[in-house]
Amino acid sequence: MPQQPDSQAVKHYLLGLQERICSRLEAVDGGAAFIQDAWDRPEGGGGVSRVITEGRVFEKGGVNFSHVMGDTMPASATAHRPHLAGAPWEAMGVSLVIHPNNPYVPTSHANVRFFIARPQNSEPVYWFGGGYDLTPYYGFEEDCVHWHRTARAACEPFGEGTYQRFRHWCDDYFYLKHRDEPRGVGGLFFDDHNTGDFGQDFGLMQAVGDSYIEAYEPIVRRRMDLPYGDRERDFQLYRRGRYVEFNLVYDRGTLFGLQSGGRTESILMSLPPLVRWDYNRTAEPGSDEARLTEFFLTGRDWLEGNHD
Image 1: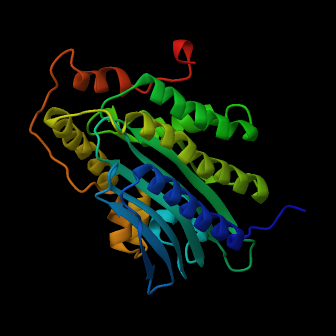
Image 2 (image 1 turned 120 degrees about the horizontal axis):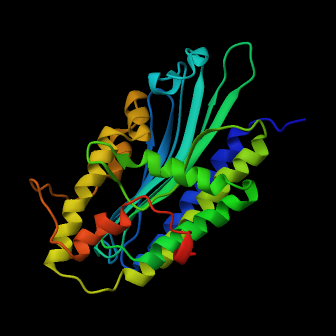
């Protein structure tokens, strides 16, 4: 018989994942620690937000666990599931964004999540989602290749083509339509994942969650001590504006959190502490700043041809 959905097992894993990621990032930073903020949601559930600020390596980072529930599905979750309208539900996940000090270290984002609805007089309906993506300000090909090789390795046990499917999904999702450009160099994204085999589906979410820090930490360590000046810092703050635009205009997690009465501080912890917008700014031709959009932010497959 198929394994029944086990929300307690998922919760146990997610809390452990949050702890492991925070411990690894603290070790990299070596100068600051995550503060922990446990919170309750009046409508049901709560979470634990963990935030690091003004570190040696990380200007701001948040690793948030949430487990919220309600009696009626929010509108953002029933748009293509009208049969679940009015059903009790639970949602839990770990979501994180890391904004480093050094412009040569990319921003990274990761999320893994589980949703289950329990309609009256029918079996529970569950799905998993998640992924991770990388947003460099100054690109390095070896970093992009490492990021995607780690992502591919995480997906390999779950069928041929899984990585490519999730990679394309990531490229399509993390795209700023009003700017006509990708947010970063991609990674993985999947949603509404339910094959009917809970153990297999849970295993996929774990593989993605566990591989994030293996993908990100080596990149941070390679770049965190590179010298930089005002020019690089200014460009970093300008490009952070794209990150803010995506999160406030397109991000499903932000929309769901606000619609479901989530904790605003935790939902918006992904935003960087400093950012700037310049009117009609263009990069100098042939510069490293121009190379970001001309070479790196082009939706390329980093595991093809000379990159693999």
